[in-house]
Image (cartoon, rainbow, N blue to C red; front, side):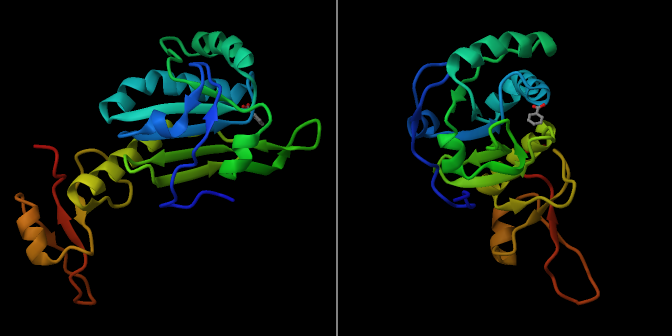
Length: 222
Ligand code: BEZ
């Protein structure tokens, strides 16, 4: 069964390059991202794990714990890390990679790609991205096919949006980036928005005459 937004993070204990990990314990009190890979020593995955290694300071700045999963054992992962770091100069794979040689976790999370079959006829694990909040609930899931590498700039952008919503009750419009105007969430009345946003908000006039598009400066930038 695929995870749905708002679902509790699955609880499991698995081997990793950092030893046994109790997933719930690992993510306690923190935002967390788990991203999956079909196989070690595959080209697209190698580029992705290196990119995440370079982005680690950005995840840390946002209080996000990082954990990868690939469908091989720990010995294989450890051998692969040298290739990843050599392919992406400056990258350090200092975050754990979970071992899932039997694909038990891939099945538990519902992240198999039916269009990509291995030599034994078994579907490969897709490239899933899961972001969990400090409440251990799923805030974001993106599922890419095994053949498409992810855009981790976009993943960081979404985490920024999720954290703005969690901390300031704003939403972010199309193609939003850091520093752009945000939107007051529809559930907030004008009175509540006036009290909540010291920088104020503007209501955009639209032909319907309805006052539902309310813009406000990003609350956490000066
Ligand atoms: C890759 O990581 O390059 C890859 C893995 C599985 C299927 C296709 C590509």
